[in-house]
Image (tube, rainbow, N blue to C red; front, top):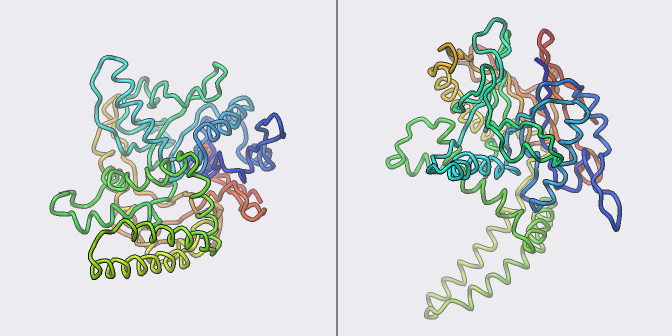
Length: 425
């Protein structure tokens, strides 16, 4: 088996280096400056191209623009023989795609077939088993019925046809984890958005405040995804598909990340005046409300000034709160693995017998970390199921920041050779 792993292409972002616009009157989408380097690093003849999140950027680009970039890229992937199929793991900027797939699977397709909708599968683990003589060898999607032995995928989902020329490219959707089992260890691939407070906030607060009614015990992967659905959905699609509002919000975001809060301060000031005008309380209550509004504005501005962009932040993964969040995510992943191991595989009654992952490949931060990096972060997750420390590696990203390319890491795997990676600078 042979496959490659990348993430954070951000189709729809004008700073993407894999695809770009060309022309003035007639706009065309052409190969970006780093596309050839990507092809050389990923190689050809791969069975799969694993794309670990933030592939489309629906949070800043309308659907039609993001998909136009994607159409060009995936045609080239197919036509150049880079990969036969795609394994897609959504991130935060394309979280909506996972929800769309679940809607097609659980609602649209069933109604078309005169059946009633069924519940969403909020998490579906992908499994690549390349262990020698394993009874479960092949690629699988947990909770998805296999059509043939060794082949488990969603059938004929809309993105298979993104090339638009009658020659589909199969997409296999997993979320939020892909587990790769080899004869030496198990590697987990995920995007990594749940390491950041915004994307995991509802789950963390819900577990602490709603525990008696949630009755979830130790949070597993399905529950983690369910609890954090609302904010993920809002920031992914709610901002990017807001039409005339989208560029305004995008500008505020870019300026705030650069430390400039003048525009945000102007908007908050106008908002306070409008809220004050709408209040019809007596003078004492109105005075209190005025104080609250002003204090609220001051605290918002102060909080934004203290924000640091997670992208390109080398120290992010070293923060104690991020390590704690990672530990929670890893424990949820162990519960997911345990559930997978308890269910017999559909053909022959064999079980997967997956081991706890010892290496994690993730993206999100755009800070590439090579497979053989001696300084790859080690986390103390030692337990009875994991007698070694976890090692973390990063796919980097394919954007430019201030005109400078951020750097990507293309991970590759081949049976008999194992994992390697190539840096794109």
